[in-house]
Image 1: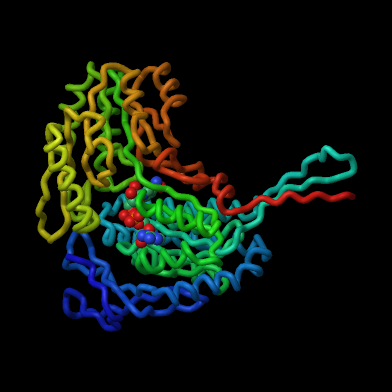
Image 2 (image 1 turned 180 degrees about the vertical axis):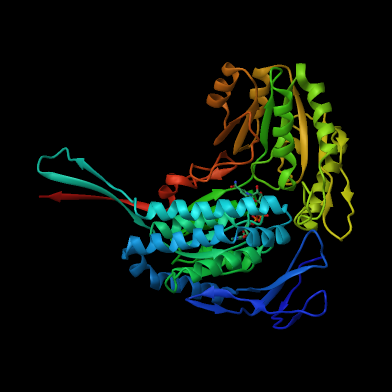
Length: 498
Ligand code: NAD
């Protein structure tokens, strides 16, 4: 079922025919404002279930949000860091207190399981608490000048109004890891969530508003990338853009930001390798692969989509992983016992199945899955899928599928596995399963990726350390942890002849 967009539907009949849904508004310049347009948010586990109806901002509304941020910036950026701390702490505490309800909403609109939805929500709360602490730890440096009698001070200052553009696959964690540091370091924000997940974005925004944030400092502009996103990336009063999403959109954003001399950071796709060596603990390797490749329906930029397996363990690994896949329950994201929810929408499901067909055409061997599944409710269910006999130059080994589809690539030995692992246009995460300290250490040093995992799934990271990749996966400063200051502040060097 397509997401329906149209003139504002103030009273909306629920699928039960009894409940009426009010259109959820954007938050602009300290006010909740219903936009000119609205769209339904559909549950991918059950397309008959409408999660809500959400406003879609137009260009004028987006410009108002930017203007509000510009007006609020002087007072917010020079105001009390204690106030900033208290607001972010309230947001973090509230998210954690409401984790079950928010996690359920997230799972209902995005399709990850309830456990995954709650875990992501907890992570978002922890991120707000981390950056609450950072508000009162903003430090500079005082350095001796090479000229006697002169003091040199290096300080960090906020940038201004920042446009935050987020994808659908982490509806609360990614917004949190952009909004929290942006506000902590004294910037104002226009937050543009992905079209497919407005409900979580709206709930998070309500929490931020209720935390006492001054008008204009935080603005929510739900709506189209081609309208809200385009307005943000081209507006002269936007100082910087932090973007997570696809490579194609990242390119457009990079070009627009370069043209407008804006600071920008891009977090994009992945084609992450998990190397399994002969000496790996088989059970650990299978668990890492099953988790990294199939959990969250494979819709993670950190998913293990290439399983690079050395000769001596290859057949045992494939047999054990195929066996493990039989125990994975694909069903409604909110049902107890579900391990894997649906694809997020029809387009993503079509893309998954298209790549299954491509893999077969390319001569890879389909050993598990590959089909659309039907369940009690109409949803976008797809079976976890495993290909073997994959060559690293096949499209299923080079292009991001973003579904529960993994490709096993055979390697002669560790050296060949490392070479295959680095032979990709992406560089977000690289994983290895081995009991050899020598190979683990060599891999950590030589994997061409921003993050390396040893005997762990490629997906699943801590919230207080840098996140990001290399090559086609990322551009610009790292996100998260203290490294976030690189992007959300600019450095000033002051000289004083005392
Ligand atoms: P997408 O690029 O289609 O959309 C991302 C965001 O950009 C959305 O909010 C969208 O509305 C907006 N947008 C679209 N066109 C725009 C334009 N012209 N100008 C400004 N904004 C525009 O990506 P998606 O489908 O939502 O997310 C999936 C992608 O995100 C995958 O490729 C995945 O790998 C990537 N991702 C990366 C990371 C990471 O940190 N590396 C994390 C999660 C997801």
